[in-house]
Amino acid sequence: YDCLCGSPRSSLLRPRPSSSSPSVLASSRLWLGSQLWQQRGGRVAALIAVDGWGVPDLGATPLYRLSHDHFTHWSSALLGAGAAGFWAEPAVEHLQLWRSPQTISGWCEWRPGWRSRSTAADFLRQLLDQYRGNEEWSILS
Image (cartoon, rainbow, N blue to C red; front, side):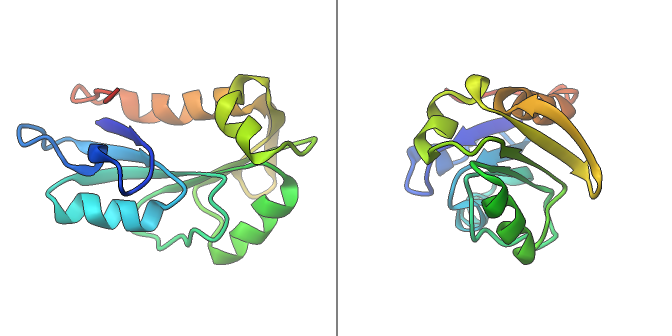
């Protein structure tokens, strides 16, 4: 797998010609980014919507939400809850979520009604570990 972090304008959205492995995309413009990636020959294993309010869950690829507050988590779920989600509690500024996920406490919701306390970084680590079992795993830096 390739793990891509950035916007769809990023040069990381060009699949490596030798790589046919699926990818995990982490971006605030997930749907567009995943569509561009697949049009260029990449495969998308999962989408991680980091502060991705307004990102729809179109169902074809697992979507995970990471929100800076409960309202964003709740209101984003109106477009599809996704496979799992995290929200900061207490709420934090958007940039703090991106810059210091290890310092953000909150709730992981792995399925409706099943929650556990965690940090944003631990939530991301658990998600990536789900896909890391594949021998094709790699991370683009």
